[in-house]
Image (cartoon, rainbow, N blue to C red):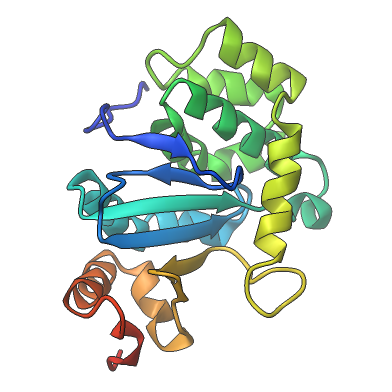
Length: 213
């Protein structure tokens, strides 16, 4: 089934740090940074629930969503599927198809893990669901791991986040430069609660963490 993406004009860009992929209006007052590993099942739970509210507000240009990708699941599960998926996501950015391809990859995570993982062939096949993504440049970037340096740097950036030297776990969510505290973590896995959290941030963009969950 081919993807039906509601906002093909959604701005996408690689940030100056070289490891952050930013999606949405650069002038949005709320900035949500997501740390994700494409093979992490909790990321799938998050993207199926609370992340929908974040994406909806990104479509409405109320939120800019920034992604930093980890690939530690390869060490725990074996193989190199996370690294290959992150490389492919970076390649999709070249064609302004990152957000759409990201939705396809995460949405197919379970079936992919059950049938061989994020191989080059599977990543290219999933790209067929994103109109206009497949082409010589994208296919070559996926096949040759063109963005291996990006994959490595992104994992390093993930590990530098928070107090734990191996990283904060995925998904981790930072809003306006502040990590979502444990008291609010449940909000991330229910769409309406995530919407409520973003509304709190809109009302109090600096001190939102001090509100009662």
